[in-house]
Length: 416
Ligand SMILES: [Zn+2]
Ligand SMILES: [Zn+2]
Image (tube, rainbow, N blue to C red; front, side, top):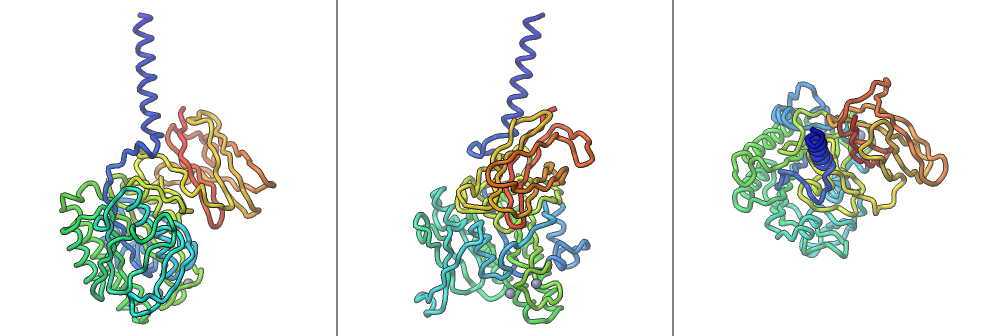
């Protein structure tokens, strides 16, 4: 009897260890189903005409996809709210410097490169993928050149399919690329919503949004009908910036209309029906793509949007740890924890910061303001209770340290 009892104790220990291992699986042993990522950027779509409209009047397809996938309620352009800076921030996972030069390949018109490496370069170099596996579709224009980073650059640049003059042209080209090349990483850039907005014709602007929405829907349908993509593709749909909340014709300042944008995610590793309250920004996109496909974005300042992922998925890499920043979430211990978690952090300036805890449904359960209190490391203790002092059930929680411009997060397991 004693021996049997001991065995069953030991079995439950094995099972418990397995559950812990699954919950806190390191990124190197990632358990994602996703092996293709498709990113769509709809230029200059104001949130109030997009997924921020509860009736989804202009965006019925994306509204329906959001109910199968995940939406971030507070997704922001936290830098420059114009295309030539914000799209590189999506690529680089950071607000990168841009170098402008006269390009002989484009009749000496001006062209640009980023200072930091891009998601294309990280992907191609680290995973040894050919250009045909990393495709960028957009209307005909002079394509940007590769980053100036000495470890990356031209030999890791994506294949550009830059054709046509409308979003519908870009969609037809994208459909062709999907059937001919089936790239594992595909970016489709739709420019018409922004240009129609600038024209000042409201009906024209709304029509461009409806078209972009139907193209996103058609894209998802094609992916689901293609054996190379079905069931193993994650699609992210975002914007570079919105438009002034006081005048839809323009953008470029820090009004809510310009800053508040969309992030829709859908795929086999994305929680279904999630409307996350974890605040996120443009630089978080590239690290999240890296997490899903298995590469690192070492110069990114953004962090992986773990709260969008199913809980059996990998833990966060220490993305951006090499980048000097004004805050740093150092360590959580013990882990798992039962009654008290120590949250060790460092603040390098006196800006107001806060530590918030979110559950895996993206709901904030607890928050506290923290002050720098001088240089060095500090510890905040959390007792596993919500803001109303109710004890929370066992599970994985996301601890996020953030100030106005930066955030870092880590996962922790509360075990009762
Ligand atoms: Zn514009
Ligand atoms: Zn504005």
